[in-house]
Image (tube, rainbow over all chains, first blue to last red):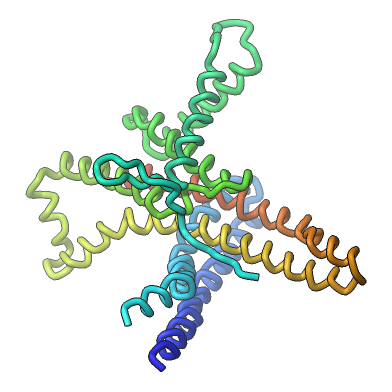
Length: 86
Length: 247
C-alpha cells in the first residue's frame, strides 16, 4: 500500500513538474517577436540582433530546464530512493 | 523493451587509498583532452612568418576569433583570460559532441559543469574581494536595504549553480530524448516487421531499419546546435560576470 502511494506520488509530481514548461515558451516567443520587429526596422543589424536574441533565449530557458530535470529525477531516481527509505 | 537511463557508470575502482572510482566521465574527459592537445600541437607545428600554410591560417583564424570574442565582452584589460575562456569553450563543445561518436558525454554529468562553474565563481569572488576589500564585500550584500542581505547572498551562491545546471540540463535532455526515440523506433520496427511470416520476419524484425534517418535530423539540433549554444552561453556568462565583478 505504501509502495503504491510512493509510486503514485512520484508519477503525479513528475507531471506537475513539467508545468514549468509554460514560462519559457511564452517568454521566448515574446523575445522572438520583439527580435523580428527590430530586424524589420533595421535589416542591416540582423546578425547582432539574432545573437542577442539567442543569448536571451538560452538564459530564459533555465527555469524550464529546472522543471525538466526535476521531472526526470522523479521518474528515474526517486522511486528507488524512496522505496529504500520505506 | 526496457530502457535504462542512468548517470555516469563507474567502470572500475583503483585499489589504492581505499578505492578511487573511475567513472565514464573521467575516461571520456581524458580522451577528449588528449584529442584537443594533439590537435593543438598539430596546428602549431612549423609556424612561419611568410608563405604560411593553410594549417597555420586556420590556427591564426581560431586565435583571432577567440581574442575578438574576449575583447568585445571583457575589455582590453582582461586579455590574459583568452586561454582560460577558449579552453572552457573547446572542452565544453568537444565534450558535448562526444555523444556523436556514441560514448557518454562528460557534460551530461553534473560534476563536470559544476567544477567549471565553481572555478568561475572563485575568480568572480577574488575580483570582488580585490575591488571592494574584505569588509566592503560583505557590506555589499546589504544594499539597497539591510534586510536584503539573505536574498543577495542567495543570488550570489545561485550564480554558479544556475550556470552549471543550465549546461547540464540541456545536454542531458538531448541525451534522454535521443535514447527514448531510439527505443521507440526499435519497438516500432519489431512490431512492424514481426508480421512477416517465419524466418524472414524474425531476421527483419531483429535489424532496426526504422532507426535510420529521424534520429539524425534530431541530432542536428541536440548535438550540434545545442552543444555550441550551451558552450557559447557558458563562456559569455562567465565573461560578463567576471568583468562586472570589477565595478
